[in-house]
Image 1 (cartoon, rainbow, N blue to C red):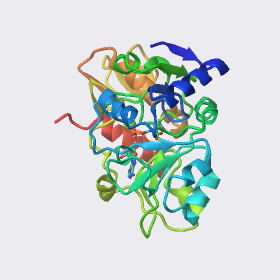
Image 2: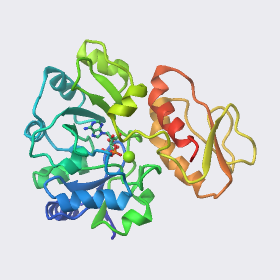
Image 3: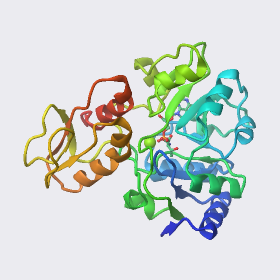
Image 4: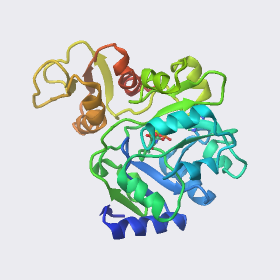
Length: 310
Ligand code: TXA
Ligand code: MG
């Protein structure tokens, strides 16, 4: 189905389709998402089928306001309030105990649910227009690179959804930070551009960083993920004539240069990986970015994009 421009009329139409149980791709500030109404289990099942996503990987619920979210979680604690006040709408998802009415398909049968209010005006307008809550994973086939522009939504998904709403280029560019608020100490399960330091500063307490145990708590964390079809590797220096991403050398026919700034880098990384993937080369080389805390979320995605297939 078509890519629709985000006119008022198209926003209303897509919201209506979602309400009726159809699937649509919506822009968010992080990446484009494959949305389904959380009240429709048939639609939720379609998400897993379309993405070839393992059933054990839970989905993030997206809403336009905190009241909608509070009506789906069993506990809304002081930490949730602080993070929501500081960062929502924005690129952070909070894991909280769920209420029974949240479908087990959303939570992969688990007792908790991840929730977020996205910042993109088009996503918010859709959710507000029908008072909807949607489950919304990134709109890519399982394991592959998340789309950050409407034109990057994979054909296999494009063909099966009611519509893709075009909201331009995603301004954050990588997926939301996922924070677990169900244990004694808050823990980052998936790093994102709202980083460890920002979360500690908002909560005024220690927060556990993502580690090996985060992999177990967040079933959707796999070693290889967010990966192009071409084998990608991290290198000190990208070779001439090999498709690659550079930071410190000039752009060439084969080399895309990204800024030595985590925010700018995150915004473009998936689009550039998708573009280099189209060249059909044997491999893509990626110049290693700095190893500092402000690059942590980018390192997480690059490690997953370059993990071996086997
Ligand atoms: O930025 C984003 O979060 C995007 C946009 C579309 O909003 N969505 C997204 O969804 O990245 P997805 O499905 O690709 O990734 C969801 C992540 C997975 O790592 C999953 O394991 C984790 O969130 N997650 C979801 N529910 C969880 C839960 N109840 N407990 C722990 N982790 C959870
Ligand atoms: Mg994803």
